Image 1 (tube, protein in one colour):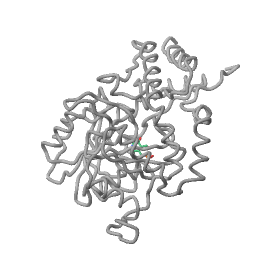
Image 2: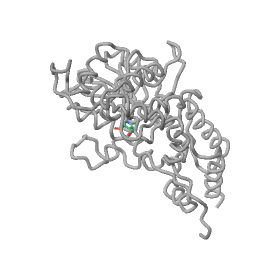
Image 3: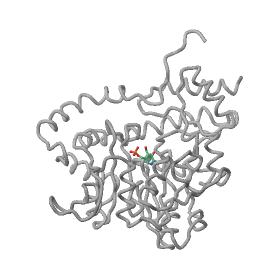
Image 4: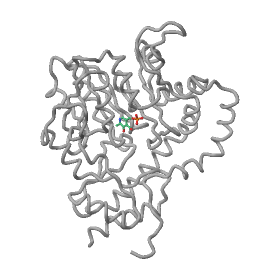
Length: 377
Ligand SMILES: Cc1ncc(COP(=O)(O)O)c(C=O)c1O
């Protein structure tokens, strides 16, 4: 193909930071000159602001979303001999966290329409050893939390949310408006740079309204220290860096606007791609319940469509092409090929179209035209 047009990336950090520089640079200068590098004032401030944003009493900053999950599981008392119900259609870190605390991940197929955990799967997978459930708000879409919370309460199970992909997703449930990270005993967020709220490096946070859990998490992120020379549990050093907290404070101010832009892009895709070929487009029970971390379509012709887009400079990606139980892990999760058929079908058919807020309308129109041209032949 001659005269290849400029690429449409799946995300563009330089564009994102170019827009932020005027606000970010003076604040970073202030932090470097005035604050402690470790657990500086920006960490406290960000934890308060993020807890307010989510609607929990506390937020405890850590070094990654994976560590947020590991620490929250440990703080909830989950360990060897325990089972944790986890949707099989998730990023591998959700499952790693369960294995890392010595518990057994019990993988369940998602609801095929939503691609998310359904409450009835909890009742079917529960045994006497089940201690907790991790509800993953995958792709930015809230899992059905009223029903999941009811199922957990009925069975006396701890409820953890993996909100790594869903900062700002909200629902108006039985108890009023509630955000991702505020439904369960604790919410675990990643601030990996690719996320809707991303640091300039690895970072994460746990949200909770349980004061005891919050104190325990503060100790567990800091080598198990109860105070400077008083160490009560064996735990890693996984604190949120002051400099990352400073970046996150600035970006939190524009998170709702960035999520609105993602929803607008999703609206353009919906209008342009409904009824095109065999495409199945993502849905949400309400507009606020989806923050489109990813715009995941499904098609039987996934690999051919991805190649067609790549030839036109459009970067579509896969979340995720290998189901977790089909990974060649050094730990046997105990699930044979074919045992989680919905998850396996998703792995073969999902394709993520670019949805980053920094992309222009013209770039999104190019994606729409390129997808339509694939089906028009
Ligand atoms: C659903 C999900 N869970 C957990 C994680 C782990 O987060 P991190 O990469 O910050 O460790 C991620 C992101 O990478 C994720 O998307």
